[in-house]
Length: 340
Image 1 (cartoon, one colour):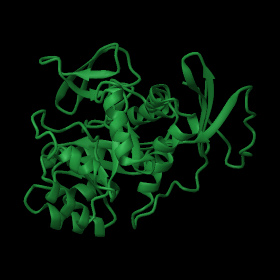
Image 2: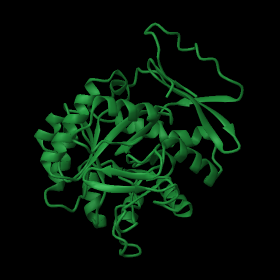
Image 3: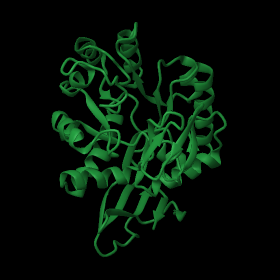
Image 4: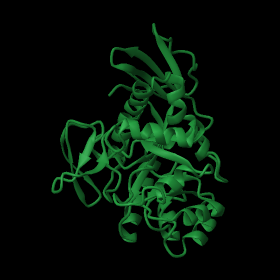
């Protein structure tokens, strides 16, 4: 993959725009479990593997990401976060792209935050769990963003969680029981809560385009965040991959299946494809779609007491439109540059 490392004194205007090129801010993915054959939920993750995944991610326009680890034992999570942090510290590219980690799990202990080098930036939890409200208040005070997800909470429990400091819904519309009340349910409660931004997987499988359209209208543009929820099968050929201890099946479509039940358990979509999807489905201009994949997630990251260290980095994506939609032609994060 043609990743170029530029000299530190490079002129940011050196890359001449090609005919028909449009540049936007770099994209940000707050929920990515793996990429390009690499599973971030592996205790054996190497610096070389993380580098490979991030180079492939940069080629899709992502310049900032939160590698995500999912619910497992505390020992397993500790090993995964330690491996991620060790790999990040060994990679100059990772230091410019990895803004921290997303713990999509049941708890955050001092051991886990220590293993992550203090870099757990986002935690997803179910607010109906005993002790959740006090926990939310505690970690928000420590500068961690709290998201609600995998929940069967009532409207009151969601409202109380937001009062305590929760600010995001994790892949809203997914991770919820298929048998819920038609109106009094956690999806409707989160859609109606104007203090919550919401992450949406715009792959066409997790949410049908017509369903997502309704959700987008409810949240309004300023509270919409596109996420991939990508696994190791993203930017990779069809085949078998892993998500922690689970084996996954990547088909030709950008969806990941449980090989035993054939039910979706993850995504193989890339962020640039999510942008193309919403442009096509809702007849949006590129600049507006990119806000959902760039400005909104970065604004959330920068809203905490622990400010992002990436705000000064040059993060730019160059696009060109063809018959398939807007395609990435180049992406830059600091001194690292991808060119088609």
